[in-house]
Amino acid sequence: MQISGSIALVTGANRGLGREFATQLLARGATKVYATARSAGKVDIPGAEVLPLDITDPDSVAAAARAASDVTLLINNAGISTGANLVSGDLDLLRREMDTHFWGTLRMIRAFAPSLSGGAILNVLSALSWFAYDGAGGYGAAKAAEWNLTNGVRLELATQKTLVTALHLGAADTDMMAWYEGPKTAPATVVAAALDGIEQNRLEVVADEWSATVKASLADDPSRFYTSI
Image: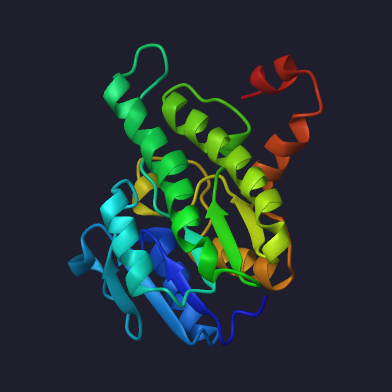
């Protein structure tokens, strides 16, 4: 899969990683980049074609698929973080997390799969796909579901030669993580690693040391990991 000459669609392109994806895709020679967001007026990326898109709304997804039927590279980046925990959190907030990260991502893949034969999908996941954190129970559960979704659709789309790549990262220096005071990776670094991974036909991109550490812990007794964080 080559970025140059591709026709890409990026969800959640109004800020953070999504804006960086759209910008770098254009810089790498993508023929066209659809930059989408629920509030399309907030997207300001020179050279991009802006589309309104709410991935939790079936009608909005269907309209985007009709308007962008030539897409060869789908970047599923749109996401939310409500801060809701599983036992104590508001169930409506937990549903929003799952509606966005799992059902929204799946809805996008189902809508765009027909145009992606020989193309690629990148799902922006998280180190929280692999561990739980107090204060992000809903987010982590939704990202874990999205991770397995990614593995499942990869198998289903293999016959049409669609590359499906998972991007895992810890904290990136975006608005969503503005509250976090620990080390954060620059969005440009994360996006460059992800796009390099697509061009290398990689099934998974682990963008930072924290994500690599969490992944390595999965083969060990979980008590060792959870007593160390």
